[in-house]
Amino acid sequence: MPGGQQVWVVSGYDEVSALLADARLSVDKRHSGGGYSGFSLPPALDRNLLNMDGAEHSRIRRLAAPAFSRRSAESLRNAVTGISAATFRTLDENASDTVDLLEAICVPVPALAIGELLGIPADRHGELRDAATAMVTFDASLNGSAMRLVEAVTWLAETFTNVVRSKRDEPGDDLISGWVRARDDADPLSEDELVALAFLMMLAGLENAVHLCGNIFAALLTSKDPLGDWSGRRREIIEAANPLPFAIRRFAVESLTIGDRTIPTGDTVLLSLFGADSDPARDGRPSLMFGRGPHYCLGAQVTDLIVDAVIPELFVRYPHVRLAIPESELEYRSSWRAHGLVTLPVTLAR
Image (cartoon, rainbow, N blue to C red; front, side, top):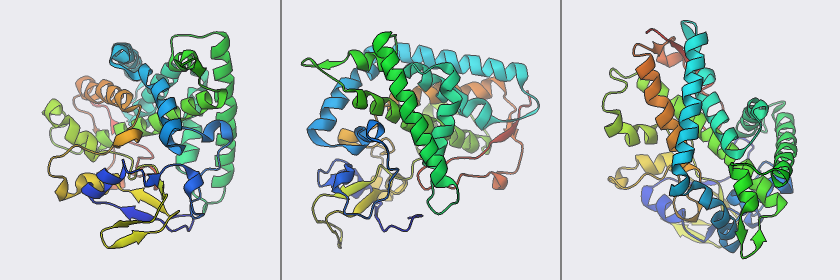
């Protein structure tokens, strides 16, 4: 890894599919044998769903999940569609011939949508985006990266703690308010659980949606018929544009054998989503980009809604849109955690 630690990478579809739901691999950092170096998050952010297994994980997920139920789907869709339409209107009014599509559409729509769904004040959405970027681009070998990470984590912890407290005093029609009201046999989510849940939704949801949209746009802008049979090819295009190379890191809670290799207890394992989905042995089986089993992505529905609200709309409004630079000059971020563009300059020829 960039920081020097050794990890195992598993990439076959059958193996990754099985291990995503295998209790012998834990996402809980307490099972690490010492080779893993993470973000060193404060307790208020650290005990989130991506750091816990078993009954603890099941309880919090059970309380959080109703916000994403089918009954809530229409309200989620309306919120995302409205934000997307307003963002495109702003683009129509202010756009010059050449714009950075990442900054104009791919960042603000997910940031505004997830911020609104969570109940985060609108004036904080830009800072949320900056903090998320500092985390997913963290590289211990780069000067200043650690300092940016510390500043981002500190700001996130303070911000989400204050938002949760405000929702207890004045609940609204948003996810955090719903989680504040959630009960499991009179057992509510604790303050740290609420803060960590909101943090995870922001970080995972925002980063994934931003770069998924950017990668899809980049792929379509280099094709001859960008929206040709979008509905029929939608799932294939989304899978190919997946910005997450790996599922969340896992740790072997016991020695396990994969193929002809034995992974010792405590070692870090990365399950390659890119490798699994492109494996010929997949043979038409479901994509693993959102995971499988108990850690299947809770916000997958929101990401789908953002993609559907953003991707076709660009080509309907700007049928002659094209890249402003050669495809070979597109610059991608330096991050093993997320494959995403730095900028996406386009010409909005009508």
